[in-house]
Image 1 (cartoon, rainbow, N blue to C red):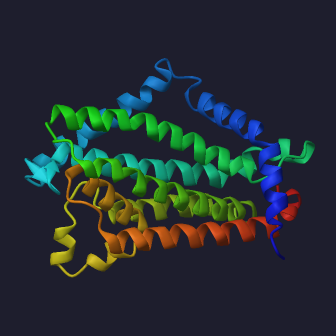
Image 2: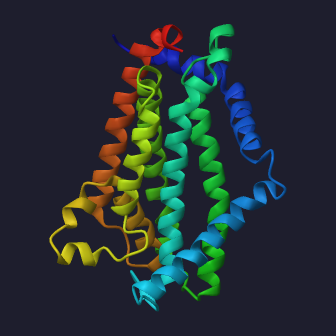
Length: 266
């Protein structure tokens, strides 16, 4: 089954206003019972950074710098990118089931729902970057030209989330247990992202391949490199880009093949 590219583009333009409204709705629903609202997007990563810094400084004896930057900045950079991936994929995975009633009543391109969930998480992530650069300024991380290149790993992560999110949204319709299995998978991904430890420890013990096969670690590695001024690790950059593009192409193809079967399984 071939994908009608022209039709897809025209359809996307036709419903782009609806997509923006779905994104706004997702953000409002996320914070509707919170007194702090969107401000929590700034407070939560800051508190998490403080707790993780205290815990791992005490138990691992880690202080000073890691990866060429202050340890709190090192943790926060990894935590923010992983949280975006985790939230975006979990939201996309549940999006079809959560909007089942609407899908059955009104015609809307079904990919709008996982895409809206991913984009809403991306906006929240973008806002939370304010905290990262604020902490970096307080910790006296020197500005450098590589910081402008930080947009590259961020875009790669967005592409990976879109591809992974589309695949998960399809699979979750037919396999409900996937939601629980993905929670376990996310935990494994987190521990192989070197969020609160230095990657050199795994490489020194011969387990570096666990990091190398994890595209999320590659994204985090390059993002940290841009902040610290050490630059981009090109093998990781190309691997993450290839992973994101392939997963997105596969996700789009399978989504269009299976979307007509959604109603029978919702």
